Figure 1: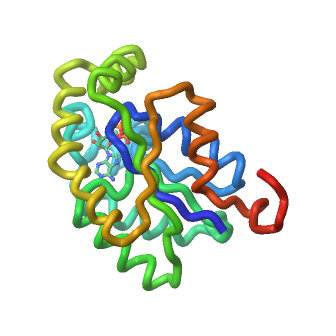
Figure 2: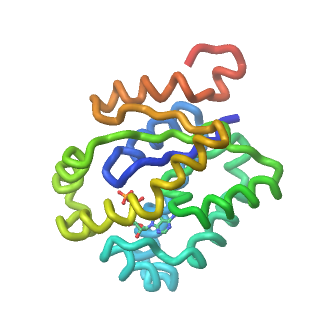
Figure 3: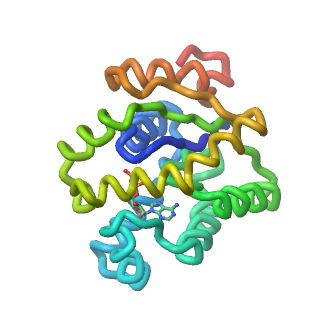
Length: 193
Ligand code: ADP
């Protein structure tokens, strides 16, 4: 069973690392950013409501996100675990998740905090070229992160779930560093990952 939350500022590489671990551990990678971008592309009601917030680098309102997470975590493919990337992103979302997990009798094993200095984050995002990777929007996303998401670090430190990993090194190195904190199903069966 592998249940992980990926924390960390925008551009830290959460998506890349979550994808790698999701493949290794064979559990779904649940990225609220990916889900929202797909909704925008498909022009669904959710996408239409979310688009303005995303392009301004603001958080999408909680009422658009919470039901989506409840539904996603009730799908069959989460039976062996999940990797959450981009959720929770504020204290209200973290409290919602705590309650939801208690309700469905699950616990999160580990919260990974990927640490990367601001200069490097900006460089990475500018080279990525996503629609919301323009300098002013990047600056706002970093500010929103500091104000709303960073407080979760202390919250999960307090619960003993937080593990910090240096995200400012080669991708493969980061993956290796993560593996020491992540117990895949293969490990649980006694096979080396
Ligand atoms: P990054 O972490 O690089 O900013 P994401 O793909 O995680 O990228 O998120 C992109 C955008 O999607 C955010 O700036 C925000 O507008 C929206 N978003 C993603 N996840 C959430 C969430 N849990 N709550 C509110 N908004 C979200």
